[in-house]
Structures are given as structure tokens and as C-alpha cells.
Image (cartoon, rainbow, N blue to C red; front, side, top):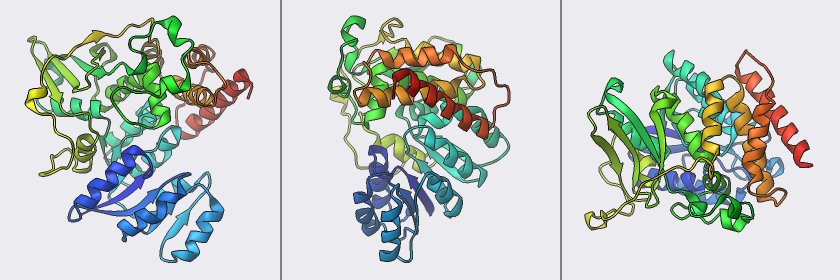
Length: 383
């Protein structure tokens, strides 16, 4: 039985993960979880999953109060609480559904404990892909992606050798601004940017979808997950969001992963370590719905974020860390009404132009560069 530590239990991925665990009590048991700020989710989760022994929440006073109410559960809080939870909890699988840089630390801890990581946290691979690969290559743990695009690629690549592949294609809905001009996007509001046409997600990743930075991140993820050169990774706009990824072979044929717009399938794929569960409750995609689907090239002038992300990976070192930190701060500022939509990507691009020269890439260095970048972005914005 898989003993699961779930980080980010209160988000969309976390809630769907809890549902799958609840549906398969013979396969999974939840032993720990984190909820960040949404402390109202704690008691319902504890009621549904009585084997939980470890919980993280941001508020220390509430954590102390809950410790008195639930003396058999160890509660963690504060800035170092997520790492402490991951170090202390006994688990066989970490489901990392955190948002942002905070997801890197527990991923490294879990792999260091030789556990399996089911990863929905894009930023961990973006900023720490080299460190994660090193751990995996030295026999420390296993990693299964949760992103629908990378689960799709994993399925397709299982049927081929890399020398048979011409390219892989990550699809994108195009987000809420697919049909907007660059000029129109300058005046986009937060409400506009949060109207994703295909997926229901948290605010940060929805804004990343609007700028297309999420696709830049997914290109970096694909590179690290599958050892595919950047030159063989493409992004295409597919508004219907039914084909999640494709592999084009050197003989001109394609292999694609097709399915409903549902995260239940990729989450289950990761939870079952790359195997398909016998039953899974989720919306189906009937064959009658296999009608006209469309593909369009990504307009680089309209969505420069993908090329910016690729360039950061090509430069390597601390550049992906700067890419992510600047993006997180800029997105946060936009959501708080402190900058315009078009300033998100421009702030990221500017941060990368003024990157410090640092050769040694280890976790403490990444943490230091992350914080320095955030400070510079906040100063530039004036917050």
C-alpha cells in the first residue's frame, strides 16, 4: 500500500488527489498533508483520512491549538515547516502539488529519502532540474510527472527510442488571450486573465497560462524529464485541449495522447507509478466528440515567454532560478493590481539581462539567488 504525503492538499490538484486516494483505500493511505493558508480544509481531510499523522499549515497559533485538539497528530508551521514535515513524515510517495519555488526543497528531501515523487510542482524542475536529475541518476528515488502534457509524453515515449523521434509537441489551449492582439493584451485586467477557456486552476498557474510562461516551464520540464534537446521540443496551440501531447517520428508518423480535459487521469497515472488504474471516476471523451480539432503555431511576438524560458535553460546555471523568481513576483504583483499584464513578461526578461555570474549551482545558491531576484523585482515595481 502506498503511504502518501500530499503537499498542497487544498488546491485543485490536491483535492483531486484526495478523491482518488479515497476511492482506492486498498491502494493508498494518506499519512500527511499540507494546506498552507486554507486551514478550514484541515478537519474535513482529517475526518475523511483517519490515518494522517502529520499536518502543515502556515499559522503557528492555529497549529498549536490543533495540536491540543489532535494530540496524536504532529503539526508543523512557519517558513521551515514544509521541509520539516517532509523530513519527519514516513511515506513512500510524495505528491507535490505546491505552487512556486517552495516546492523544490521537499522534492529534494523526498528523493534523498529514496521515496517516489509524483510532481505537479513545475517550478521544482524549472529551478532545480539539474539537482533532481543528479539525485535520480544516483539511485535516489523515482519521479513521475502529474502535468497532463508530461504524462501524455511519457505514455507516447514509452513506445519509442529517442533516436526514432523527430520532435515532441506540447499542446497549449492558448489561454484567454489566444485571439487578442499584443496591443489588446496591454490593457488586460486580472479578471480577463483568470478566464481560462479549458481548465479550472489556481490563480498563479492561470496567469502563467495567460502569458504562456507555463508552456515555457513545461518545455524545461520535458527537457529534464525525458533528456530531450530543446531543439526537438515544440509548442503548438490546440484550443480544444483534447490532444495533450504528440510525438513525431522520423518516418513522418505521429503518436498522440488523447483524452478529456480532466486532471484525474494524469494524477492517477502518477499515483499508480505509470500504470493505468482499473477504474477511475472522471468525465469521458466519447468517440462522437472526435470531430474537428485545430492546431496553430505559437506566435512568438504575441507570447514571448516561451522563448524567454528556452533561452534561460540554454544559458543554464542560475538563469532558470532567476526566470522563475522574477515570474512569481511579477505574477503576484499583477494579481494585486500593482503592474499591468504586459509588464509580467517584460520584468522577467529584464531580470535575466542582469543576471549575476555564479558558477556553483547547489541548493543554498539557488535559494540565495531566488531571494535576491525577488528583492530586485520588488524594488523595480516599488513594493
